[in-house]
Image 1 (cartoon, rainbow, N blue to C red):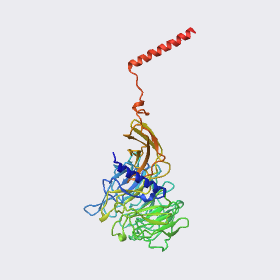
Image 2: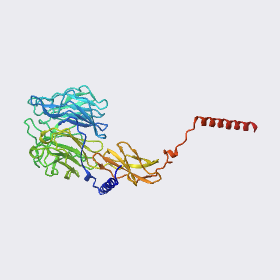
Image 3: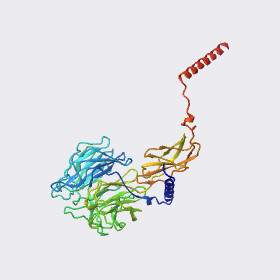
Image 4: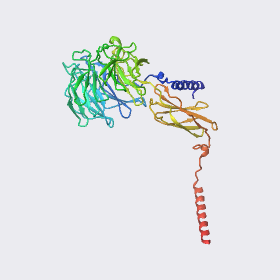
Length: 515
């Protein structure tokens, strides 16, 4: 049983939290929480959210090397359950790889393409695989790419096909210009119109009108590019969209994030600049975005957060000149009109994955950390509190009350658990999400109680208490309590009852005859 001091502190914390929500200050509670670690360290892997909200993690570079000083890749996959904060094993890939892509398809399958195998630098493969979430298996190969590639991009187009652009090939192909298209209906690949320049570690962003914007990347001479191209969805042809000399724009390993208004925010990259650029597809023009606040990125991630228009979370990456790895995070808000520092990552990292979960949190996994060590750690970013539960009811029993509630309408961070608190006394019970009831025990019969429910996200960020509170008075005679139990007749009592019924029936018949 918790001490009164504990309950007073909890009540004060919830009171302060509710006040902050009223003042529109929920973002002040944003922060990072470590999760259960993976059993294997990995970087340059993929992490894909599935329809059931679990996350499929596939492949990756271990950070170790073999006798020939070649990196050792992983063929393993793992599944992360955010609600339970647990890991389980998935099916192995046919061969180890890193620097591949994973694209969720309509219907729930995931397409894995290419990647670098264990071995020399130019050891990319041409395999493509379909993962079935329904069977938790990889289907037979969906066919071979025309060219081997890793560090490419794969973009799901509005017609359901997947556009693969560029990447690193085999010897002499430090960067590719080729384009290939996968049709999931037929399970076949076809060639598209080549990109006008060779690119790897670039970005490809699907625009609302169906065009694809390719930005930056390394060319065949390992030089970061200052160029961008648009693909016409009708013809497949590419058009350059020149980048004006707004700032230094030699970028690779950067991020490009589609904003809710259709513009694209470009941030970070190996140019190690604090500037950002914003592309406007309405007139194919570029404008300077807000500067990063004294932080320089490369190998960073960027995730569009729900709930706040234009809010993009940029996390991790290299520091100035690539001398070290950083833990900084930055949030762009107001479409974007400003950049503000956010709480630092628990572990500095680059080359990690960042996955938006169904509840609005961001899951960061793996990557390289200080000293180029590859990590098995992960952490969860929560930027808003869960919404408070709704329609709370209380059913009294003997020295206990069962409290029920409903998940609130609207969007909010998915809770990890719910806590019900009884007043007076502060006794509690806890139910893990998605349960919607629990029973507070140890109450005093005859004492009126009120009950509130608080939803808590992983990391201890609480919702405001449910309102209005539910009321109930436990009693030995309450519904479901022993005092209200109905006695079950014994066997002899059943005989007496049956005889009485027969006599009653006979009396009715006699009266009927006599009349």
